[in-house]
Image: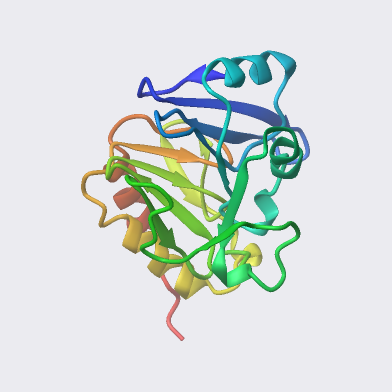
Length: 204
């Protein structure tokens, strides 16, 4: 796992050649138990690193298409899993807790519910007001800039744009850690505002 922009955050990735993009997992290392977000498969080296950092107590999944290696990791570590309440009736694996807008799984990790993405009620996570962690809707195909899913992947473009505009109002955000693509470590609020400004809802 690689150190990120804060000493308590780590990331690891798997490259998806079909989509030409990295899929990223995030680890938040904390005294009361570590949390993984949208974890991809861990190499032996990463497993050992995670264990040396205290293992994992919670896995948070932003949407049903980011289950990734969550079940395998939970089976081996006895970690609990949290997922989006909007997908409660159809989620592909068991969750111990369902998260909705404004929930805090643990102090400092706030849930933001997004709408219009390719799954209902996708989650974004705001870590101590300054780091935003996104799942599918907001991504980065090029270093230093953010984008969103193509229109043909969205359930509702107008709702998706409104969700991005909401994220762009988080004025303390310094970093945006995306589930897919390149992380943004600096000026995250500016990149979110730039993204929101590019999204124009066609006249109906």
